[in-house]
Length: 109
View (cartoon, one colour):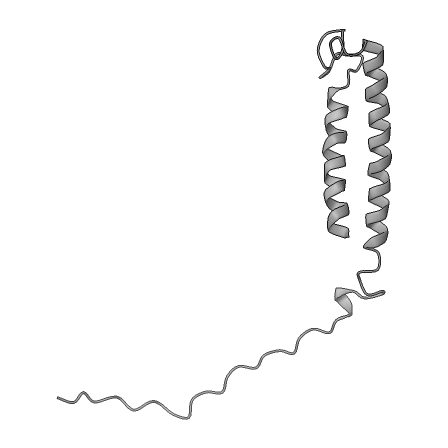
């Protein structure tokens, strides 16, 4: 379930970024072209209203998905645990030295 919500969240995020980038601000920005907006489909004012409404809807969906994901992941960690609560591992002692020097090997012919 979390994976599905994360994928939907990613697509909503990308759509929200795209809609915000194509909006025209007062300084020109990355607007969608001339004053005609989306061509013969809508007027400039209609395009602005559509983009504003789409941004608001996508923002609401983004916020809802963020809250849902936060609430779902809230119980995954054990309550009150910390890395600092775990005792450090016991030190590893050095291996014991060998009993004596090894006998040299004599080559046989």
